[in-house]
Length: 234
Image 1 (cartoon, rainbow, N blue to C red):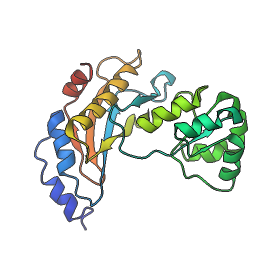
Image 2 (tube, one colour):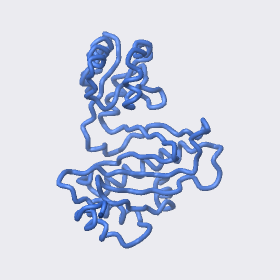
Image 3 (cartoon, rainbow, N blue to C red):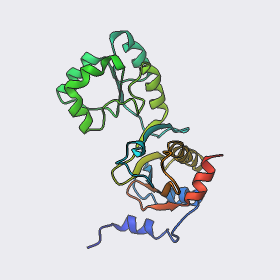
Image 4 (spheres, one colour):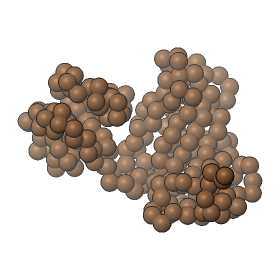
């Protein structure tokens, strides 16, 4: 039995090459989106690193110049003096006591959590719950900060986290299929540049093995790594 439906096969028929230029790939991401909703533009990269080595366990953040196209729900673990500023910055819920109570009762309707360093000890009660869902605030992700309101604003505008998995892959998003081509390209190049900037000194030779773009439920489109890395430096 076929693993893919009619729409996927139709999208796949539009592909005829092994590797595509940036502009070709982004055009195909848009053309191969056959779902009835505004699909997410996804980016998948494989790096020539070994995550078992601490210096090669790559993790960081990047501000997408044109945002993700998604409304990000942010909460803030802060003391009373910061609650108002965090809510004005866009936090749906702010305040450690209130958040702890809601989460202990099973509430997890948010995408990102930020925390003031002074509140991290309190999160011990729910650390396992947040960690399992990938929601635990972290200094490396920029979500443990003394300026929570600023961090919330950046996240709402399009700041995202990237993190390598056990197979040396990075999986992230770079917008919505409805975005104009130049905006998708700008976001994609921002991610590539951030990864190049995060290259460990211990890695010699090639660094980015492959870059693949796709839309939600669409086929993978391989991008010319050399062109993408060169363009990202401009």
